[in-house]
Length: 137
Image (tube, rainbow, N blue to C red):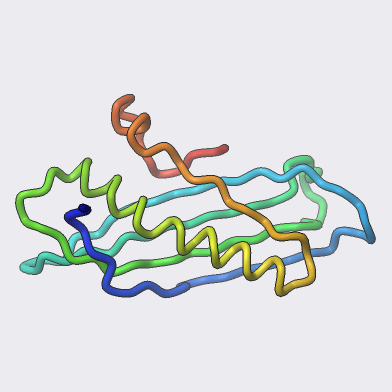
């Protein structure tokens, strides 16, 4: 059982542009960043996941044909004795499924095929001591 509990979440920011012509296909690139802000004198923190999905082959200087950016925040309660790296990973694992569903539902509602965002492998990132600020998949 996880030692972090998601109390609530919300979309803080959402940008969407789809100017892909007709039935054209594009190759997508996904970028993510994730961070945790700890609230002073409380056993609460805010997990913030930002994700951008865009046309991988977009020409520099040209108008974007497809881009989706979403920032989602979740408020979490946690146990005080938790290791920060473990907590960071647990918070991501709790929040990301909501981000994935939001992206999937939004793209379907926009008349597109469902889009499934890929999750980060937080354990390997922490084992490699890689900063999580921005990771390109």
